[in-house]
Amino acid sequence: MKYVASVSFGKDSLAMLLLLIEKKYKLDEVIFYDTGMEFKAIYNTRDKIKELLNSLKIKYTELKPKEPFLYKMRLKEVHKRDGTIQNGYGLCGGKCRWGTSEKNNTISKYLKSHYGQDYREYIGIAADETKRIEKERTIHKLLPLLDWRNDRKRLFELLL
Image (cartoon, rainbow, N blue to C red; front, side, top):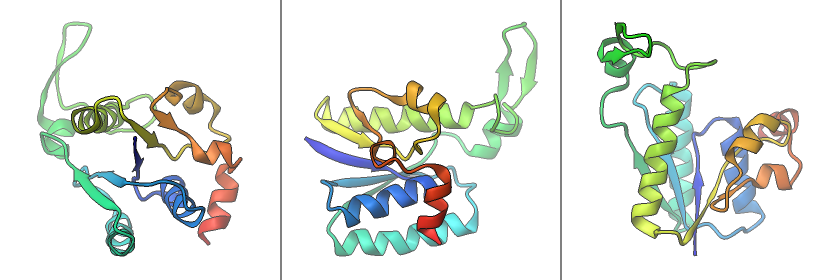
């Protein structure tokens, strides 16, 4: 069984990763999905964590979208359900989750192609994100922040 952490280097997944390491959980690999449009602080944090992972001999994998983020956001021809066509999917966030869906699908394909069904994926969802918890809970996904009862407020405190 392989244990893999999906990490965006935002507060939740970063806190999860650091706690997994501190608590000596089994961790074989860390995956980062790089849209190519992250904040500089995310890349700076990633670079520091890569050094830590290397020293601990934990594999680091970086996945990227098939098409550039800006192309999909602004230029790609998108056929809407009502029959109209628009350029790009628009900004991610709120109800528009195309970036998240692509990230999750890419990570799932990677894990299945490398490990078949023999893996568990740590996901950094805080204990107070009840809708996400219900949606993400599967046999392959582990939610350690929930198990440790870390809500978003506590995660901020941990990282300060």
